[in-house]
Amino acid sequence: MATLTARGLNKSFGGLAAVRGVGFEAHPGKVLSIIGPNGAGKTTVFNLLTGFITPDAGEVTLDGRSIAGLAPEARCHAGLVRTFQIVQPFRGLSVLDNVVMGAMLRVGSIAAAREIARQVLEELGMAALAEAPAGSLPIGDRKRLEMAKALATAPGVLLLDEVMGGLIPIEVKRMIAFIRGLRDRGLAIVVIEHHMSAVMQLSDHILVLQNGQPIAEGTPGDIARDPVVLSAYLGPKFAMAEHRPC
Image (cartoon, rainbow, N blue to C red):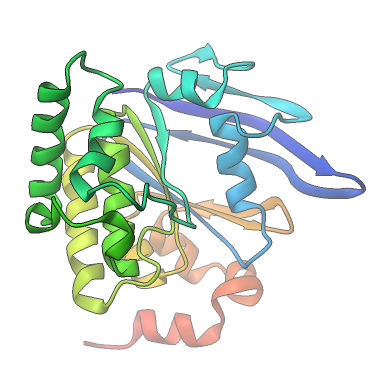
């Protein structure tokens, strides 16, 4: 398992500052959530962490070692793995073979990769879909497939970009339980999510972004009561719901 650290990340596109002064630490066995309104810079931060874009300033380290200059695939080899908000499975391949692609990162044979892939699908409750074409899956199952592909690479740090988007309530409940299980195994997990009930249940620490820069951070309780966050993002109805007697 590994610790992911970001310090002073800045990124501009033309004259637009997309990310300004973002920093955090993601520790093994903990869930860090990054929240904020659309356009706050959350996915840009993930792109900076994983090497899809290069920061104008700042540093990203994995267990204290800089990963500046490493391509996304090299960062994946190092144990830093992400999912994508817009899922793009290999539509013509089976669900199993999609996951095999991820497993091949760590093993040298198709047979071993298939065994890993089957285990991951079993854990996610997708074993019955193993032979289904990935392109035939509804959005909820595609989200779970995206998670399975990432987990098959045996990550040390897992970045999850809206894995609960499109899930029905029972699926959200199951996903929360599954992510908790990954945390309890010792993974460092960073979550981007708009499902605030899930964020509050999952998170050990929350970082709030607005217009590309941090406006608050703390425990779920801290964030639920923060007047700046309530004004900028969550709204007064959220505060009332959080404190309403059961």
